[in-house]
Image 1: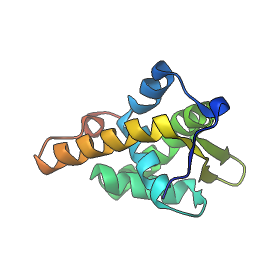
Image 2: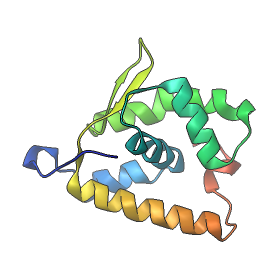
Image 3: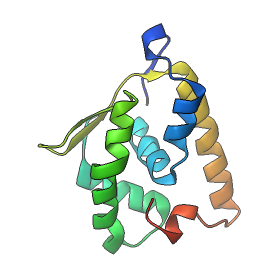
Image 4: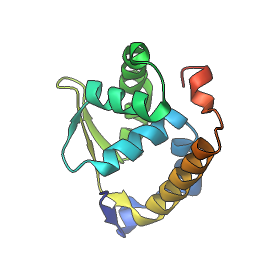
Length: 127
């Protein structure tokens, strides 16, 4: 379960929120992290993201690379995760309440699209 905060310093602008949520791969990583109570290894996170995206295990390596080089630094910049590149450990930070609301809506919409058989746009290309 994710941790939420009302602290003013934790507030993200609407532009920052949408910039984070625009990537399906980042959203999937956040969905996985908010369900885990313990820090996770980036390779384990990549496997869980691959499963969430419904892609083959052979793409897990590509997902791990994109998480390492693109998505986790972006989430860290937004102060949503702590990522130690040396150990490969990722941990969800306290999530601002207003961000949690948008993340929950995104998760509901992603689940609805998955239920309708809609293809995940991230399946077509690495995002």
